[in-house]
Length: 196
Ligand SMILES: Cc1cc2nc3c(=O)[nH]c(=O)nc-3n(C[C@H](O)[C@H](O)[C@H](O)COP(=O)(O)O)c2cc1C
Image (cartoon, rainbow, N blue to C red; front, top):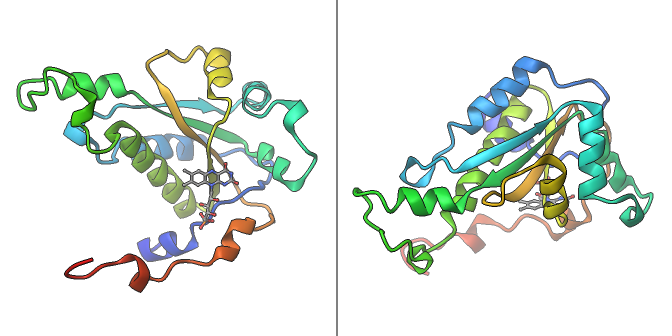
């Protein structure tokens, strides 16, 4: 698929056909994720990859406990045959930037103009979403309110924080997000040429 088509076709998909994501596509998604840019080439990301039905059920029980579900179409997202939870490790960045070429040996977090660890994991997640579209699949990136429950269910180390998760699979008809009614902000509103 042409790059421009991938970008324009990408939208968050919230319902999926039951067909599994082929193993080579899972591998490609993860390999492309590791080609994301990262500050100091720290690559402080990590991914919890869930393909087996029992593991996905465990994930959903932790991430979205049954007593918090409402029986709405939003639950269709649980049909995704692949879940990739995206993690960032701040510790890796503090360690990397304490190396001689960076020199932030005090590991003072106030030096950081933005949380590069989360930015980089987000770049990796976007590459996975785009790769999914390129391969005829779709995905949803969503935040994890219960990230601690997910961490304890899957033995995630304390120094890794979930920036969100991807639900990926072959798209089924779904309901567009009500958020889309806001409309896309035009370039003229968001881009400030020459000065703000
Ligand atoms: C950081 C982040 C968190 C999001 N969390 C959710 C979520 O919890 N549930 C959901 O349905 N969509 C979630 N979305 C998807 C947005 O609603 C969606 O990207 C936006 O409405 C624009 O739609 P589009 O991506 O289909 O173009 C999230 C997107 C981002 C970038």
